[in-house]
Image (tube, each protein chain N blue to C red):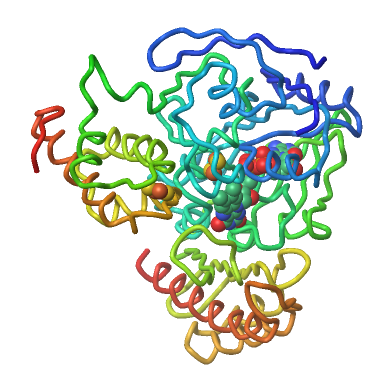
Length: 166
Length: 289
Ligand SMILES: Cc1cc2nc3c(=O)[nH]c(=O)nc-3n(C[C@H](O)[C@H](O)[C@H](O)COP(=O)(O)OP(=O)(O)OC[C@H]3O[C@@H](n4cnc5c(N)ncnc54)[C@H](O)[C@@H]3O)c2cc1C
Ligand code: FES
Ligand code: FES
């Protein structure tokens, strides 16, 4: 049996400890060790973005990070976006704009879009498309996703979290 | 992926000890955007990974008019793209770093990894060649320097010995009226590997070019320094004629292959087009300084 390593990290605001093999990706650890199945496995080569998570404020592909690298880091996943039973404005706007069909790409898009808006609350359409170029969607054709992100940004600038209707 | 061990050294000295102890089984891990994929595919099979990102000496990013730029091998590309000083002094290097992958990839990948991976198509390598960047390489035997154009020896192979670490790049401060530019051709806007990439840096005295360097990517088994093309520009006004001559000389040293991204003939054509374009942009930038 391979040697497991003890790792302590902050996941969606809470301290989490786990044991993992050094060869395991952070994606594998999140899904199979910790039961956080929001991040999805699409390609395992950094191309699709379905596995996107935020580490220390930066969005990355968790399939290209080792679980052991999470030691001492702050990790945000899609599971941390809704607060107190209220969807994050991005989640709300994805629903309103029908920005998802099969949904497998959605957690990655939500996390990548959150990383963008955390840094740039008022992005242009061009900036949204650029920020989401590392996320692939085979269903929606992207346009509804871009509209949803721009609309969510507007709502968040207005300070009215989680409002419905558009 | 096969079983491995992982170490996060807190100093260069510690990293070198770990790497020496690991021998042929050791390998440096930077952003992992090449290495982890290759390990999953069984292309590379190191058993002991030593993380470059935790080594302070590899995270240096500083500029001074005397020393020029010191760029740590493990500085992630987002730091380069977002650095106002680099954007001002080395716009071509920033262009190259900004082209790698997506936001997710740029948040992890490094210029050191881009070079050490040894791909002839690595975007930042022609930009570094154009800037005359020098690699500082450390091992238990001490430190040696290698010019970027001499670093890659064949696709996927570099001059690094198993116990050596690329520590940093040093790039001279640009003299007055000096500027660089990097462009690549890909058939889409984002997320692809260069069909051809060209970097250039020029220095002007009035209209006369007093120094020039051109780097080529994806047109030979290794990235190339276009020595004769660069030399042909020196002492002449940087006009269309001089630029066309340099582009032809750059085409002469290209030995491209045909693959799914383009035919050899097409690549040769692109070397001419891109060399002309980057020289024009670099010249415009140099005039504006
Ligand atoms: C989706 C995607 C898109 C990409 N797009 C591009 C692109 O547009 N252009 C491009 O050029 N590349 C691209 N790449 C390839 C890759 O991102 C780059 O080559 C990147 O710069 C590699 O850096 P890294 O830090 O991730 O290296 P790693 O994968 O960590 O390492 C790469 C190699 O270098 C060695 N190494 C790293 N640092 C050191 C060091 N300090 N000393 C000794 N050895 C070292 C490692 O052992 C390994 O062999 C892409 C990759 C992905 C997954
Ligand atoms: S699964 Fe990580 S990018 Fe596709
Ligand atoms: S909704 Fe199906 S892949 Fe995006």
